[in-house]
Image (cartoon, rainbow, N blue to C red):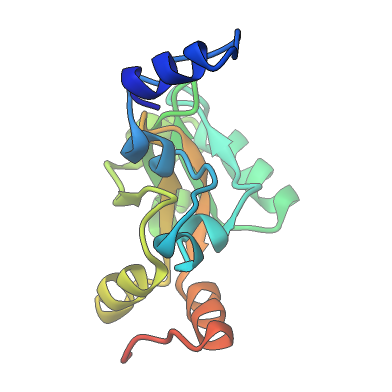
Length: 165
């Protein structure tokens, strides 16, 4: 809330009032609930799946492969200890030298979106580009999960808000 709103609440007798300096956009980007006209528009946060396999830069590819096999998936998101997305390992990169590191095998800087991105925009942009997934991160770049374009399309179809493609 704005400093003015915080001050007003204090004058009304509220004792635990905080000035949220980052503002409404930051609140929305964090995937926190909103009110008003745009609150009902489907967002990326509505379609994100958690549970991604993550690894650190210095993990060996052999270890990463065994963890992926156990999880039944073939994609690893490379993150810092704080969960900030650095890269992604999949496909041919997973078949590399088992003693090499995730940092050596990863494709750096994958495309990411925030949880407040409108689903119709995601489907239009990423679907048109032929991508099947996009990573969702918070405003600091920490991994929230993966959005599957087909999941996003299904949500839009259920709500009658489907984009053209």
